[in-house]
Length: 407
Ligand SMILES: Cc1cc2nc3c(=O)[nH]c(=O)nc-3n(C[C@H](O)[C@H](O)[C@H](O)COP(=O)(O)OP(=O)(O)OC[C@H]3O[C@@H](n4cnc5c(N)ncnc54)[C@H](O)[C@@H]3O)c2cc1C
Image (cartoon, rainbow, N blue to C red):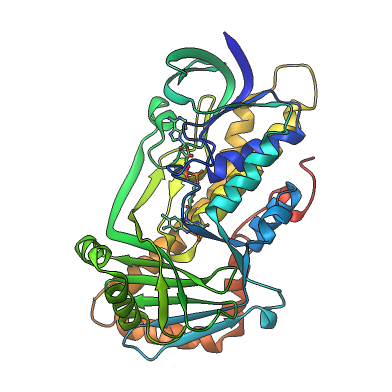
C-alpha cells in the first residue's frame, strides 16, 4: 500500500494553495483532485473572480505565485457601500487607510493556472488527477483512503488526511463530522460585464431588498457582478436576454458605474452557510469550504480558507523537519483547531450578520442600517477596523501571511 505523510483531498483554490505551501517541507505529500485545473468543468477554478485581501496576496507572494497572478489582478482602491432606497452611504479609500489597495480581484482560472503550474515543479508533492476519493477509514495512527483513478480503486495510507474537497466534503462525511447547513434561500448570479467607461478601481456593495449586489473592478477595465437574489428571481434574471438583463441590473444598481454595454454568460450559485461541527477528527483535518462555506457578500470565504491552509502548513512544517521520531499529530492537530477557532468564528459571524442585517424587513432595522452606514462613513475607527479585514481578522497570523518562510 502506498504511504504518505499528508494526503490532501481536493486541489481547488484552498487545497492547491496548501499543497504548494508544503513544497517547502520534507513531508511526502499526495494531492488528489477529481477535475483537472484547466478543465472547463473545474468547479473551483471557474468563471468567477475572487477578491483577495492583502493578507492573501502576501501568502501568494510568499509562495512565489503572486507575480503570475498580478498581471491579471485588479486593485480595489476604494469601496462604496449603499442600501437601496435609503440615504446612508459609506465610502472607504485605501490611501486614506494607508494601504495601496484593500485587495485585488483575480479571475479564479488565473489563480488555478498559477498554483498548478508551480505544483508541477514540487518534488515532494505527487499529483493524482483526475482521481477521486470514494471513502476513508479512520485508524488511531493513520487514515486509509480509497481512491478511484483510471478505472480502478486503490487504497492509500496517510499519516494525516486533509479535507480540502469543498462544502460537500466526502472526507468530512467519512470522518463522521457533521456540518450545520443553513440555506440563505438566495442564489448568486455571477456575470462579467462592462460599462461605457473603464473602472477606476472602485468596488461597490449595494444592499437591495432581495439580496446584496457586489460590483468589483477587473483587469482590462470591466467589472464582475455578484448579485444575490431569491431563487425564483434568479431563474427569471438568467432567462432574460442580454439587453433586458442589463436593464434590470441598472434598475437595481443605478448609474454608479455607467450604462452596461456588455454582459457575459450568467452562472448561478445557490448560497448556504455550512459549518463543520469540528475541524479535526483523529488524523483528519478540514480546511477551506470543507470546514466552512460562507455567503460571498463580504468576499471572505477563500481568504479565510487560505489562512487555514497557511496555518496548517506552518504547523506540519515544524514537525516534518524536526526529528526522526513519529510526530505527535494528535497534539498538533488539536493546536491547529484551537489556533483557527477565533478567526473562523469571527469571519463567519461577521459575514452571516451582514446578510441578516441587510436582508431583513423587520421594522426599525432600516433605520439602524441608515445610521450604521452614516456612522461608519463618519467614523475613522470603523473604517480602520474594516481595512483590517483586508489583512485577516483575528489572532495570530500565519508566517506566510507575514511574508516569512514556513519556519
Ligand atoms: C459566487 C461566489 C463568489 C465568491 N467570491 C469570493 C471572493 O470574492 N473572495 C473570497 O475570499 N471568497 C469568495 N468566494 C468563496 C470561495 O469561492 C470559496 O471559499 C473557495 O472556493 C473555497 O475553496 P476550496 O478549495 O475550499 O473548495 P472548492 O472551491 O469547493 O474546491 C474543492 C475542490 O475539491 C475537489 N473535490 C471535491 N470532491 C472531491 C473528491 N471526492 N475527490 C477529489 N477531489 C474532490 C473539487 O473538484 C474542487 O476542485 C465566493 C464564493 C461564491 C459562491
